[in-house]
Length: 264
Image (tube, rainbow, N blue to C red; front, top):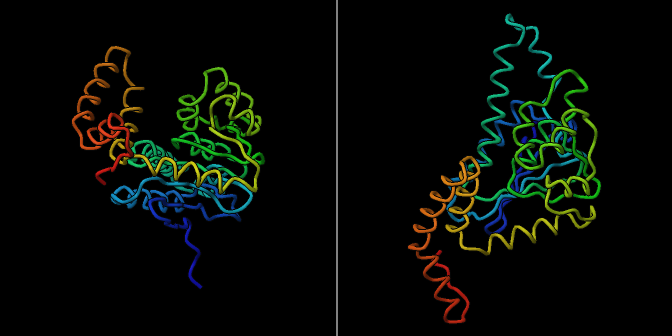
């Protein structure tokens, strides 16, 4: 029998759902799973009719992080696993940056635990909706492997002290506390999770797509700049945006008190 795909894909209108499909391994981010997700995201980036991506997972866990069994096996390599570990973390870093740089908004739909690189995956998504059953942690400190790469995404979502507490204690954070510190956007009952995420995705999908693409790219780029540079850059973006057909139609519709008819 052929193996089950590591990432399941379902397209509904302008929304693409990608589901992590290693439930028996708590959706640990193996090399294979990360490669499959990378391929799916790269393919989605070429789909101009696509508006939003929802990233979910099968089973009780969203993702438990890196596959430690797979990593431990590489210690038998001639170099003790050095090359394999470097390649794995580079692969993971590329995947997380692909989500951040993706032309479509990516929403994490979190039904269960998201720990270590799994928490990093949630933090890397543009938005996140979680079940009350979801929990989050960066517990690497408990096993002697500080969550240094998850730290990059985490520290760009929550305050420094909230990030350091998660990183230094490794303790689980409830969905409610994750929302409070800014790691996720919304918390809903488990039975409402899919519907709530879909509703948010549909709302974003209804917006003018080129404007959303421009805005997402600008949001992350300006965060990496100083204040003055960020304002200069954002002013250039708004000038270009103002000359685009979507802005012309949207502003015209507002002035004329009618519904806009987006060019796409």
